[in-house]
Structures are given as structure tokens and as C-alpha cells.
Image (tube, rainbow over all chains, first blue to last red; front, side, top):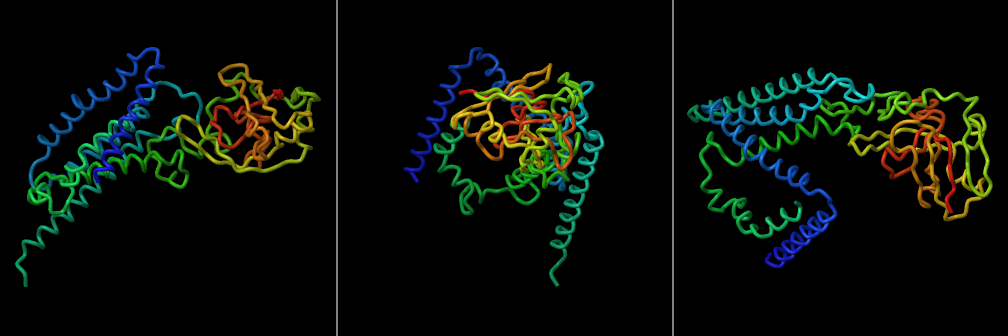
Length: 135
Length: 230
């Protein structure tokens, strides 16, 4: 275990070295910093607190597991769909962004809602069964 | 970033192991049912990653194309059921007329070919994808003339590389080069037909390059000239 850890750690440091060596070739490092740091700031300062707040404020009671799960899935799908939903102007040709993305987004949200309700029903049934005294 | 992750796992391995073990203190201290817990978080994150993958991966993994909801491309959408990046109109070539078209092969024994002469040469069929660095890919059945046959007719040596020049007027990647291995590969074609039909102008009518293991932008369309490089 210890040997594996040391080897893995050394491999990690070596990989980081490769990254630094590649960074030397980059003429303008500010773009890289903005990209890497921006992703971190966006996640830690905006997305994570927002998700936690929504989870805390909007979902209460016994059934929160499936509802929170549904919100996480729907949020991830929305973020992925956003560029296609906000498509700016005309596309280069008809094979670029060829689908009806608003319709697909609504379909996805409906599917997530159906899955969440199903999970809730199953959970409620399980709860009722456990409460019933054994016969 | 991968390096930092590997180092992190190596340093934290005992804690990670304790955390996931059935009998570890962390597991025994798990909250009662209905409270927030690791398992439901893991399930939610897993479901989100799965849903995102399933709704987009079909643009490059065609067996899952039926599940595409948000991918910027659909493998069946485009001229002749194949997506396109630069159309004939965008490249400024339009529909190239058979009467004026000539394929110029420059080498030790240069020659030119008309469209009919290209069609009369031995035709070969290959199944190869257009794999775009943008993230989509789509396999198709191409048929046309082997590049190695054209090279040998031009008297090219066994180590010859070639430069492929397009007739396109606008846009990048007008010229691409084929190394020795690509040039002599029997799968490398100047394709005249796509899935049994003549190429659509948007796919490079009258001929386009199709070679294995090559990004889509280098599969030059509207090929007008092959130059043998020593």
C-alpha cells in the first residue's frame, strides 16, 4: 500500500511537472489563469452556494432526497442545454444545431419530474410497509 | 490537473479507505434514513452525469443517437445524412461542373484526369468516419480511387508524401499533407461516392480525400491537385 502510494504520488508530481513544462510554451498565461481560476470561482462562489441554498430553502420534509436529486439532474441538463437554447443568430449550415432544443429541454425536464415522482411513490410505499405492524 | 488529483488520492488514501469501508467510523456515523447522506448525494451526482452523457454522447457514438437531446450535431442530419462543417457555398466553390473539372497530379510523371476518367479507374470501397475535433463523428461508406494507385501512376517513390490542394476559395484547411504511411494506406481514397451516391457538393463534389485516423478538417474536399513531395 505504502509503495503504491509513494509511486502514485511521484507519478502525480511528474504529471504536474509536465503541465508546468507545457505552460512555459504558452505566450500569454493570463488566459490560462482566467480559464482555470474562473472555473474554480464560478463553481465555488456561484454554483455550489446556489445549489446548497436552493436545496436548503426549497426542499423540506421527508421526501427531499428524490426532489434534491431531480433538481441536481435538471440543473446539470439545463447547463448543458444552455448554449443550444441561447443560440446566437443563424448557424453556419443546417447540420449545425439541427434539433428542436427548447422542445428537447422540456422533454428532459418532464422525464426528470416523472422519475422523481416515481422515486417518491416508491419511497412512500416502502415507508408505509415498514410502518405496518408485522403479521 | 490529473497530476494534482493523483497526488491528492495518494496522500489521502488512508482517509479515503476509512471513509468507504463498511465498518469505518465514518460509515457507522451515517445519519438515519431521510437525513442528508453521502449515498443520496452520490446517487444524484451519478444520475446527473449519466443524464448529461446519455443526452449528448450520440453525436459521436451512433448506437445512442436515439437519445440525443442537447448535442450540437445529429449524426443523421446533413446532406446525404452526414453533418457538414463548411458547405460548398461557404467555401466559394458551389457545384463544380464536370466539363471544367480536372484533377492535376504533379510528380515525376505528371498527368490530369477528368471526372469521367476518375470514374473509369478501379474503384474501391471503404468504411471510414468523418471525425471532427468539435466532438462529433459519423461513419460512412465511401468509394473512389486509391491515392496509392494515383501516386504510382505519377512515378512517386515509396517514401513520397503528398500535398492535397482543394479548389475552395474561402476558409482554412485548403491544403493538407499526407505522410508516407497515409499516402500508401490502401484505405486512403479520393472518394467519388458516399453511401452509394455521388458526393453532394457540400461533401466535396467531385472528389474528396478520405483517410483513416485523420481529423475531419484534414479530409480535404473539392480536391483539385495532388502534389508528390519527394
